[in-house]
Each structure stands twice: as C-alpha cells, then as structure tokens.
Amino acid sequence: MSYLVLARKWRPQTFEDLIGQEPIARILKNAVTQNKVAHAYIFSGPRGVGKTTTARILAKALNCLSGPTPQPCGKCQICMAIADGSSIDVSEIDGASNTGVDNIRDLRERVRYAPSGGKYKVYIIDEAHMLSTSAFNALLKTLEEPPPHVIFVLATTDPKKIPSTVLSRCQHLPFRRISGQKIKERLKFISTEDGIKATDSALEMIARAADGSMRDSLTILDQIASFSEDITESEINDLLGITDIETLARLTTAVIEGDRKAIINIIADLANSGTDIKVFTKDLLLFIRNLLIAKIAGETEGIIDLSEQESSAINTLKDKTAEEHMALLLSELIKAEPGIRSAFYPRISLEMALIKLSMLSHLTSINEALKIVGGHQPAAGNPESKTHGSKAKKQESGSDKNEERKTAGIEKTPVHRVADSPLTDIWNSAFKKIDETNHPLASKLEEGVVSFGDAGIKIVFNGGLSVHAESVKENLPLIKKLIHDLSGRNIAVQIETVKQKSASKKDLKEDALNNPIVKEALELFEGRIVDVIPINNKSGGDNV
Image (cartoon, rainbow, N blue to C red; front, top):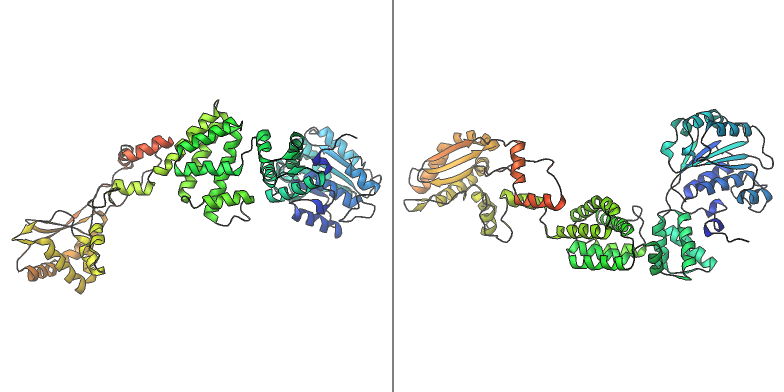
C-alpha cells in the first residue's frame, strides 16, 4: 500500500475531531439533532482549516445508517464510502474547473434524482467563488428551492466574491484560523502516535509557519520527518528558513538600544546559516507587532496568539522602550519590507533599514524638539538657560504658591534701577499686595509681559491676551497708588497691547523646512511635511 500523508491520515472523521472550529461543530451537531439542517451552507475561511472536511462529516452525519446522528459511526458502508470519496450520493465539485453555465445545468439535472443509498444527496462545491456570474445565476433557483433530499455546501476562501443573491439563500458559517497553541498540541499528539521525535520548540516553529492552517502544519511536519529523525529548531531553520524567537529577540533588542554592531553581526550569522532574509523580515515584523500589542494591551490572551517562548521574550523586551518608539519602529519596517522583498540584495536592504531604525534611540521626540525650537524649555544640557517667562525662577526659588504667582509676570527683560531702588523689587511687593486684596486682577497681570526701564514699568498684553488690558487699565490708578505707597515715588505704569500677526501656512512651512532638527528628521525617514500647526506663545515669540 502506498504511503498516506499525515494530512490525509489524520483527517478528522467526526465533529469532535475538528480542531479550532468548536462553534461551527456545535451548530451543525445541534442542527442534525433537532432536524433543522439547512438546504444550503457556505463554509468560508482560510486554507487548511477544515471546510471540506466539515462538509464530509456533515454528509456522514446525515447519511449514516444509524442516523441522521451528530455522531456518525464511521464503520458502516456509507460512512466508509464518504470517507474515501467513493460515495455516489456525495459529490465534490471543483469550482475552479467547473465555472460555466453548462456545468451548473448538468448539476441541476442530477439533483432531481433521489439518493441511491443514503437519505440525502450532498453537493460540495469547493472554491465556489471561482464560479462565473452566469453560473451563479443559473444556480440561484435550485439553490433557493432544492429538492428535499439535496443539501448544498459551498466552500470558499474568498466569501467577498460570492454574490449577495447567493449569500442570502445560504447559511454562512465562517471558519477561523486555528491558534498556534492548538496546532502545536495536535502536532504533538500526532508525532507521539506516529513515532516522530520532535522538540516542543520545533513544533512551535512549525505551528508559527503554518499561519493558522492545520493542513499546512501537517504537511510541514511530514516534510521535516523525511528530512530528519529527530526534529529540532536547527532542522526547521535549515529546511524552511524560519527564525527562532531568541534570534528575533536579540535583533529587536539591538535595534531598540541602537547597537548597530550587534545588528550587523546577527544579520551576518543569519546570512551564513542560509536563512531566507525575506522570510526573516516577515517574522521580525510579526514579532515587533506582537511586542507593540503586548506593550499597549498588557494582557495578550484573546488578542494575539503567542507561544510560551515568544511570550517570555516579549515580556522581557516590552519595558525597554516606549509605545511611541515601538510604533515608529513597526511603521518604518512596514515601509521598508516591500523594498527588501523585491531587492536584488535583500541582506543589504535589511541592514540599512535596521541601522536607520537603530538611530531612533538617539533622537529627540517631536514634542520635545518643538519645545526646544520654540524656546519653551532650556536646551539639553543647559538647565541655567534663560526662558520666556518665570518658570525657571519658580523652580529655583522653591517659594510658596503666592510667591510663584507673584513672579509669574516679571523677569521678562533685564532689570534697570531707578534712584538706587530696583523696580523689580517694587513690582514684586506691589504684585503681592494686589494678589492678597484683588486676586482676579493679579491673575490678569500674570498674563502680561512686564518690562522695566527709565520710563517706568510697562505691561504688554500680546495677541489674544489683550482682552485683559481694558480691565487692568480700569484699575491703573489703584496700581499706581500702591506702587507710590511702597516706593514713596511716582513711577509711571504703562499698559499696551500688541496684535500678533498670524503667520501664513506657507511661511510656517518655510520656517520648518529651514529648521535643522526638522531637516534631519526628514532626511532620516525620507519624509515630507504634511501640515504645520502654530504654537501659541504667550511671551510673544515666533510661532514654530
């Protein structure tokens, strides 16, 4: 007898054998038990998840000699004929090679005849989305009102191509990808039963390579079993070019920490071992994506499917950097992936992409850069630099809340002295008295830019803050009297308003393009400026 591949040998024969499709198995079992089987079903989902297999199990459940039953015996003549594909009453039609109207007309002629052995005739149309529009139209009437002994099952990997007129006549059961953990458990069981020696980590790699397809995982296991008696990670990497989690974690760490030498060494090791760089890039993308999801969501159960080894590596890495950094890494790697896939030298393309990404660890965030450029905080490494306003003075003084409020409107320009008495001290004392007796007025004075000169004290309200000027002018006699009482002199106090000209988008964009930090960011990421948003600047500085 010829060798039977694992995918056929271990094909599920009952609803209980279906892996990862428990909701659909339950629906069909209940339908058979309650005698509520629909006349037409659409089974949709990715390849290798059990669509055609489930259709066969449904056919056995309906035609078994002890049925209809949700648990077909699998031993009677009808069950055995359906299992080996020789049943006259169960027809499997390839939609890709029977796309025309003539094929559907032939099917319509055959459905009239009663089943020869079982209770139902079951028509399984595989890859149903490949049927032509005219073929679907010819099938509509039969699909909506078939003879009572006929059941249709349309299996497809692309349900969007099924016309809505067909979808509305069928019960749609969407099959889902099978989790890596369930595939691994099934592979472990089959390996034990068939005497195949494989490590847990090797089975995890096979499950990851299968991408949710049980059939693909069994095909890979069959292939690896012919390659080696003892299946390990190295054998899988040699044959399929799949990278182990440890290497992915080491490379991701090097990128996050900006270790460019480690990046070069790891890629060199991959190239020397014969790893497919294009496949590796896809694995790296998925790993960083899982890392970002784990960082954002915390708990990954029910969101992403991780093996124990991958979960451990991600838990170690996710606290090494911020979400914004990870998101930028993933975004830029996604942009680089098509170039790596189509590159004549994919190794060089990957090296350059990762080296560029590693430089992100030394860059300032956009918000921080804008603050530095706009003068909203001291430049890095120079905490004593002047600021617009009195925030620096607040931090140095460590005074109480009233003292912080008192100094908020001063220290705008260098202090000048009149008659050996500094105006700043006089204004500080006056401001404190105003705050104690008329706090709303003090709050409005805070919004002004106070300067001192030989002509006295000048308070300027810029742009939108000019709304406070009128209220302050009304209280100007009170302010002057208070200053006179404190200093014993008549000191001029002027209130002025300045209307800020709103820079045009074009001017702002030109300013941004001339900024060295913005230039470096654009060159590094090959980007462009989409929009420029002005920053409101109370001190009257330029918008950035």
